[in-house]
Amino acid sequence: MIILKLTKTNYSKVLRFAVNSLKKGKTVVYPTDTSYGLAALISNKVAITKLYKIKERGFNKPVHIFVASVSVAKKYVQWNGVAEKLAKRFLPGPFSMALSLKSKNKVLKKLTAGTGYLGIRIAKNNFALDLAKKAGPITATSANLASAKGGFDSYSSKDLLKQFSDKKHKPDIIIDAGKLKKVKPSTFVKLSTKGQGNQQEVDLEVLRAGPISEKQIFAALK
Image 1 (cartoon, rainbow, N blue to C red):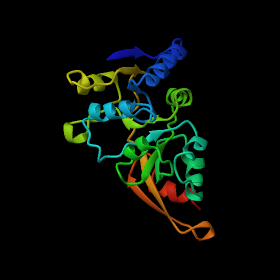
Image 2 (tube, helix red, strand yellow):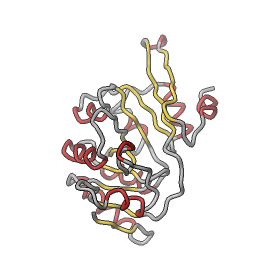
Image 3 (cartoon, one colour):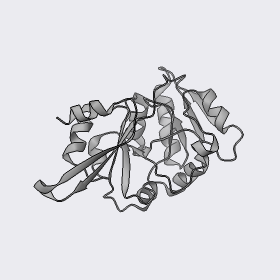
Image 4 (cartoon, rainbow, N blue to C red):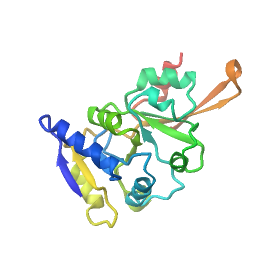
């Protein structure tokens, strides 16, 4: 693993290195507004497969993607009015939405784990946003081993090394932005639709509680 300390003075240089590394099929640990995330370009099938091996995670478990903007998200999922309201209120931020996948891309289908729904994330973190802007959409999964393998959310390079240093498969690069504030994993909701046009109904299900409460979610929809 290559560990790069991120500072104000080397920000552009480290960002450029991370972007180029992702484009070469490498996996990159990066800071977010919650814990550290593990990035692979969603356009690289080999890198995605490597990511699952690093996390020691089964392919029956979905992985979210991180995009730089709502306009990019709309290219991959079936957007709707409820998603628009929630995005305006909570994105960028610790909030993820699973929407019906509209892309026929095989790698994205793999990331849905057969559910047909793709998780979308836009973190409120400058480095994460710049990474997705420069490299393109990346995976938004947390940088840890699967929970069944003893994994835990990583908020520092110490946490990362504790989990990966003795593993066969490990991240290629760690962008060390220091110790992150301990924030729960993003609130995660699923938006499923029924019907068409004016007859369309959207069902909202909270799949994971997090920093944004259910009360805040429903208040945003009024």
